[in-house]
Image (tube, rainbow, N blue to C red; front, top):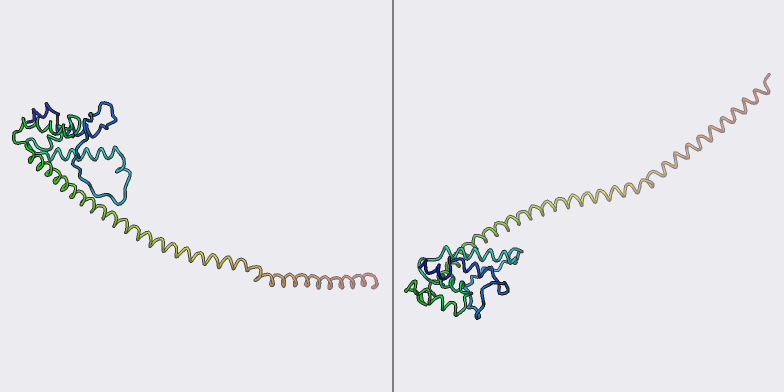
Length: 227
């Protein structure tokens, strides 16, 4: 069987890799003879929040390559759906004529190959992929839930801190408003007292000056009149 597969298409993953990394527009890509039959596709649940790597064509190709590698590990001994699929891809793509040709050719390697065997093995591979994806999805879902719980705890902690800071800011704002009002009222508070002191100083100097003037007058009289 392996010798015949090598003659018709190479390793199990070779043809699938080639169809993955060539497009219809690429030079030297697999020729398109007729519309292809749908290739088995396992649809993973659509993420609630899309992220860039999912929409990156290179990332998608790498993910599909991992799926093909997983299928290669799941491939059972003998000739079945996987070998027919791979051989049809090597012939240019999984078209109806290529699938028929691959099936006819591979029956020479394994006389037990039949339509029922192809359908049963193909559905088995799909079921296996679904099982693997289900387990992987459950694992990722658990990781997502743990990350969401961590994010929620961080949010609660930050909200508590923010609330405390907002309370402090509110108290500081009230204190600031009070101090500004006190500063603005200083003039009204101290002006009367300052005016009173200025009045006392002014009148005190005037009174002293008047007394000193009287004394100077007396001194002048003494100087002139007393012999």
